[in-house]
Length: 351
Picture (spheres, rainbow, N blue to C red):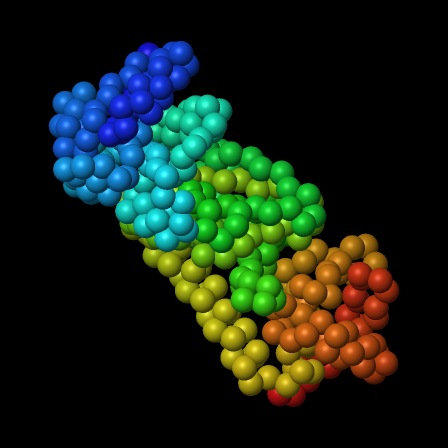
């Protein structure tokens, strides 16, 4: 039977929540304030801690800080349960290292689902840690390069299927997973205050995305969306972190890969800032041609809005420029399909 520690100063809520959890077949320990909660966590080492934020003596943030600083308790899944619903409060809790944040009032299924998810995550991490121990014991399965890392993710990650336009994750979501594209294509993008989209990355089969901090629980800083029907493998970043800690060669190779991505983003920003409309459009077409698979007729399938987002211009402006390229015999356009007829001329369009 899994053990839950509930830290809550409201007597009625503490008793009712404890009863709910006991009916769900959990063993429940309760503490009426933060100080007692810390002592009980260190003494009983529960499977999950559920903690209110606004409490006497020691608030929930103080509880999390105290337990995070102890090697015996810093891996226990921690869920905030609070009436504080402002985005800044949620983000503060997650950045401090909480695994989840539920707001009062909550649904029974929501709480049970959060607990089961955190227990499952803890089991996955234990298994991954055991794999690392086995590797250190002499099993020849070390992940030494990017190719082996992709195989590791494919073997140990969770498969996700998305249709065209499906959201993979949203800005502000918990950044638990790093994704490997198996089939299809995905994009990452930001939205400005007016809702205008800026694509920050395009990812095809065998590409990674979704990297955030390995040392802090920072939420995703952008959106990710499927550009076509896609299959992705998600690996928990804590598992990836443990693999990287054992393989310095892999760390260097991954750093090189990420630095190349940063260079491409810088080039894109410079292009948006200083390039002519024609050059921006040409460079964007070339980027998509590199990332997207052509059909049998040599066409790439891409939304005009996606092209405009990467190029950093209004969709209407991009469409006019594409029409000019078509008249000049550089490309061929039919509906959503674009076929590059003269790659050399497209590459040589001046700034």
